[in-house]
Amino acid sequence: MEKSVKYDDVIKQILAVVKGEPSATARYASAACLLSQSFDYFFWTGFYVVDPVKPRELVVGPYQGTLGCLRIAYGRGVCGAAAESLKTQIVKNVHEFPGHIACDSQTNSEIVVPVLDYSGKLAAVLDVDSTKYNSFDEVDQQALEYLCQSLLKGTSQT
Ligand code: SME
Image (cartoon, rainbow, N blue to C red; front, side, top):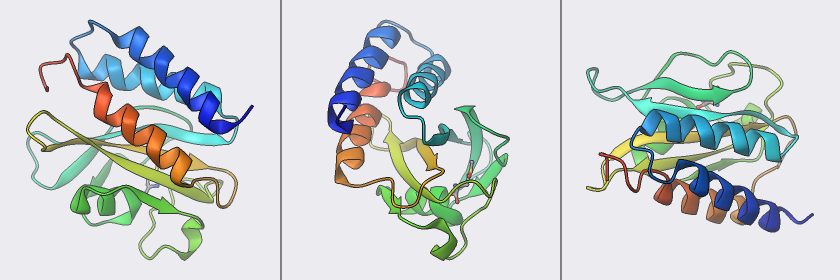
């Protein structure tokens, strides 16, 4: 199945599951679970959320995969670059990305998408890491950006 079709299906499913759920954590957890079940090369799929206390720091949130590092400062690695720039990051080969945080050596490419709240402030980033090189392109970007824009709608964060 084409990946754009897979994304359409899984995103519809995620948004149906979280409809009416006020907890952002429950929404992040459901999205991480269903996304990681849909693509066999999604090796680590989850969220780093903005720490409410420590400024300019992300802390690990709901995820599927092997142990992720707990905290990432803005500007560090791919997640930190997305948090700093508020722009989606696509890295075709993580071994060539300066400052990439190698939580697990099985990761070879990744995409990180910012999740913004109602006021346009960063709430979290969605990090998807792949065992394959060059896994992500504009199809993934468009689908995951749509998901991230929709995921917090209906919570207290929107
Ligand atoms: N890929 C991330 C680090 C987090 S983990 O791999 C789970 C990065 O360089 O931002």
